[in-house]
Image 1 (tube, one colour):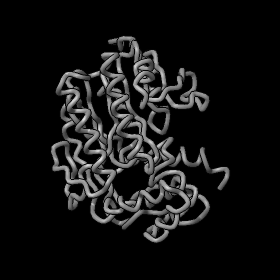
Image 2: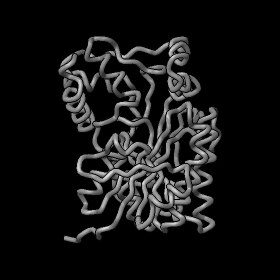
Image 3: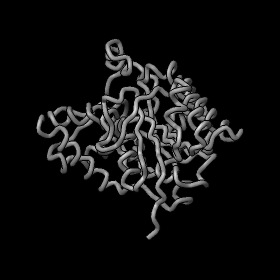
Image 4: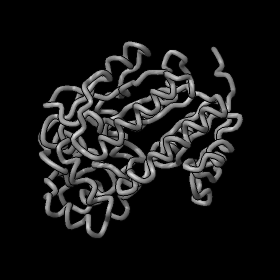
Amino acid sequence: MNQVARETHVVLGAGQIGKSLARKLQAQGHDVVTVRRDASKGGADGIRVVAGNLSDLASAERIAKGAHVLYHVMNPAYHRWLTELPPMTEGVLHAARTSGARLVVLDNLYMFGRMGGEPMCETSSQVPCSRKGELRKATAARYLEAHAKGEARVTIGRASDFVGPGIVDAHLGERFFQRVLKGSAGECMGDPSLPHAFTYAPDIVDALVRLGGEEKALGSVWNIPTLEARSMNDWAKALSPYLKRDVRVSTLPSWLVTMLGVFVPAMGELKEMRYQWEEPYRIDDAKFRAAFGVSATPFEEQVKTTAAWVLATWGKTA
């Protein structure tokens, strides 16, 4: 069996995806370092964590020294995007440029705006209808420009809304499941009967690792393997037998989002993203599947594994 060459892989971020990504890379035999602003908060068990601010060029250069691959999975709180994403982008590119490491960037789908229910593919027209979409469009363009100019070796993987083990800050995350386990309806930002694509966290991790190891991935954008869109109601029905309760979904009123935003700035930023729940929200992953022969995890397995994690995490407090 072919052995994976031992390399130094640096994971920029230790959140929902970063910890699992670090564990996956370590399991493959790589030297793994996780970077976060406050190293005392830790990362994945047994993996070295270092403090660093990617918005500071000197810090970014120090962090990346000796790296073979960099994985950018950092995501500031919504209300800090405008001030933090641009300098962070330049810092990440500086890290890739000075180290010569391959750079894998985890991105989302905000730059596409309203698609009228059509699936978003890598070449779909980018007509963002939100401030965050405009910023994501500009950020992705900057990464691809840097690659085209030979400043850095970059590839981008795009995912829809996250779901699965370890995903707490998401539509199908901590708030949703804590309400469900207490007998209340889980919340949805819009119509819970509309198809909405969710990308399974382990599939995201696997895709990022694949992109980091493939020279042919460089210079391109790749939609990460994602199942055909299912509604929140479909997820609720599928989760019910595993959570041993009738899982229901209700629409979170716009006025409540506005009110919560007064006290929780990140919640207020969700209001402009409601368009994603006003029409089918689909993603086309055909390019990734054709290039790498990898498909998304089957729905039943996603549901079963997510439910087991939910019960292990919050079941005793329900």
